[in-house]
Amino acid sequence: MLSSAWLLVTLLSSSCCVAAPSPKPVTAGQSITLQRRAPSARSVEDWETWAQNERAFLTNRYGGSIPKKRSDGSNLLTNQNADSSFYGSLAIGTPPVSFDVILDTGSADLWVADASCSIGCSRIAVFDATSSSTFKNLSQPFDVTYGSGEAVGSLAQDVVQMAGFSVPNQVFGAVDEVSNGLLTSPVSGLLGLGWQAIASSGSTPFWETLASSGTWTDPLMSFQLTRFINATNVQANEPGGTFTMGFVNASLYTGSIDYQSLATTPSFWLLSLSSMTVQGKSITFSTGSSSYAAIDTGTTLVGGPSSAIQSIYAQIPGSQPGTGSWAGYYSYPCSTEVNVAISFGGPSWSVSPADFQLTQISSSDCIGAFFELSSGSGAPSWVVGDTFLKNVYSVFRYNPPAVGFAELSETALAMNGVSGNPPSATIGSVAATATAGTSGGSPNSANRWTIHAGAIIVALASLVNGVLL
Image (cartoon, rainbow, N blue to C red; front, side, top):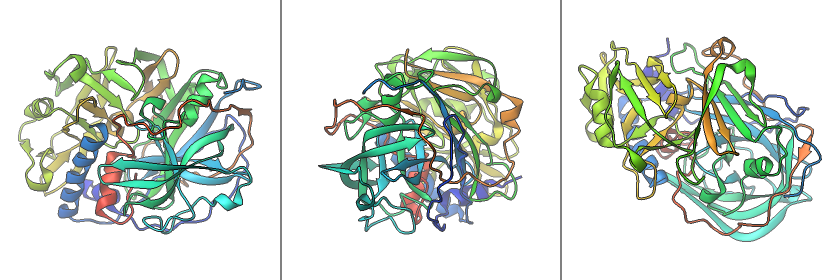
């Protein structure tokens, strides 16, 4: 069983070699496997620093033409650093060049490191505008701020392809400055899968162009994420599951998908948290807008209001609030198997005790994956990341706007902890194309939880050279 200390190390590790992407043929509808990065040993002090930055990051973040045919496609994910983040691949330009990017439902911009990047972009694949015959410089500044740093560059436009789909005029950020550690090889950027309302660029996100144009067979996308946090001999990059566009993969879930309508006008993927139990006992928390939770694949843990988090740990004998760098987190006896279940108005979904245990900090004490989050005005009180999402098949539906969850199938569960070769960045044939609308394009000042392949990754980024997004 993988020790929590190793997990922590994984999250904090940053050294990794970058290889030039090698094109491989992929047809529409095919899946792209995600990779996970392996961690290096870190001290308890490193974990403390990471935890402190993780909270700071989340606090800051949440403070076309008609296509010829409808279709669907898949992208195999990579599990990086024992569940720290999950990334897939896409291609940009003419001829297309592939890049690995974090897939983040908590933000809405696409950006990649540019060939001119001089800060924070060492040893990663970069985008060379001079090599693309369809590149267009929009001559507008681009700046995305995270809790642990920022990515700065300019807005550009080019052909973007992913899983058999293409948008010929996709706006994205060509970044030339990145805060130290924000990018870790082989990841070159981030693909935001949130709504246009929270896009820093003000432009229509890649996924939204495809969904709104009728390009997809069904107007939705879905995730199945693997678990390696409690596995042994985990590598930095492991098979991470599957991301689909335009359909749900029936082999990865069982039963029906329970859809819950978004709590507000589409921005973040917000649901109202209706109930929670810990060790079988109900937790009391504020209702109304104070119960809004952002369902965020780019965040590693689960953050919530101080009073609710205190109530959660009050049900765990021997738990104690963290101090110093661990402020906002709680420790509890590692020997205790913590059972948490969450509902958003439908069925109650269980969180595996393995996912609840973030890391071990002493011979007997562990740190929990639920922590106190101080969100800003207009930002959601809860951020529900991969600690929860690894336990369900999740679906993000464009119309009508909703998030759905289903029980994972035996096929999906059998992938947990099974090491293998992570998927390679690929370039496939295009089966369907949609053109982005002309609306937007101006900077959006809306609050957002920018990047995070886990806020954890971004937080780590500030700690160690090159962390997950």
